[in-house]
Length: 154
Image 1 (cartoon, rainbow, N blue to C red):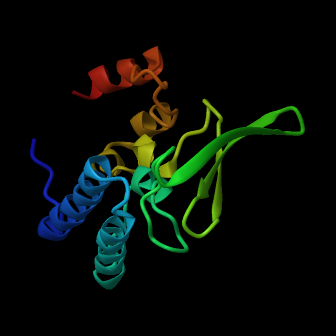
Image 2 (image 1 turned 120 degrees about the horizontal axis):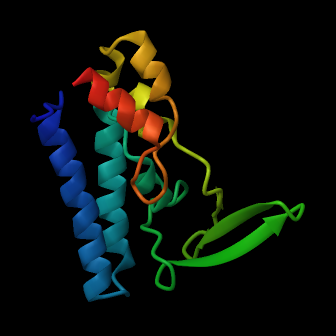
């Protein structure tokens, strides 16, 4: 079951640039400029070809200066709590000072991770898609309703 991407080569190039930036910083943490160049090139290619990047990649790149955010090397990470209910991870870029507030909610599910966002799931019947609307659990397992619905459709 191979899933064919429209711009597979472009995604491979983006992946290569992201890995190259990580590799450069892991070998020499003082070489921030080269890693920033790789991330800037990655962002430029994605914008030019109108490609969506994974949210995990977006979280690790600074929006202002395009440097790779690695805790302890190019960024500081703090845990904050607002109104005694919501917890946030505050990531601050050491190059430009830009901060990112990331929500720490274990029940939160990104749109890209939901079953209805997947193209193959949209083709299924409406009743089984409604049963699969719940997000998978954080450990990768799914609820029994979702498993029953998947086994009945196959």
